[in-house]
Length: 171
Image 1 (cartoon, one colour):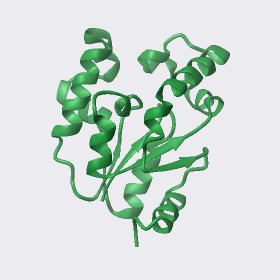
Image 2 (spheres, one colour):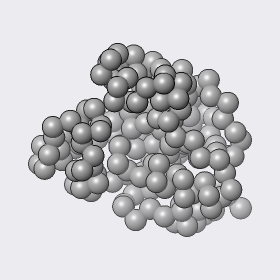
Image 3 (spheres, helix red, strand yellow):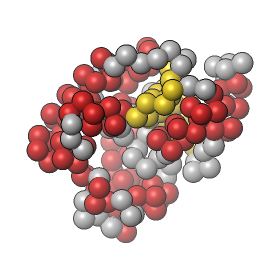
Image 4 (spheres, helix red, strand yellow):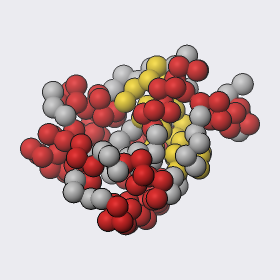
């Protein structure tokens, strides 16, 4: 089963995704790394050189053209579900899980990473939390279309596997 992890940056898609893939014996795919490999550029550099529109087009093409294994955990970029028909495509091609955290929890996680994340550059403290809250509000209608939502910062592979079994996605 393909499992697409969606959610805001800092929600744990990559960290949880790697651990979950290991527990399930699935392959882990980080879409940001796939984009960096395909473009031979960091995400920050690509944003800087070409802008968000070009990045979103590239993200869309790579998501849909990647030869994804049947059993894979795919960590998407935070904005990926919000552009083109990416979320609809992910819902048709696998299980989408929204990793949901509060703006405060996300701001705490992202406080030391604002320089490496283009849209967070120069945001600190309350400004960072307010920015995240505003972005989450704008993205909520996309994120909540995921087939499953897992709330809270205590996301563990065991917890996710338990939910997947409870919901009938895993035996």
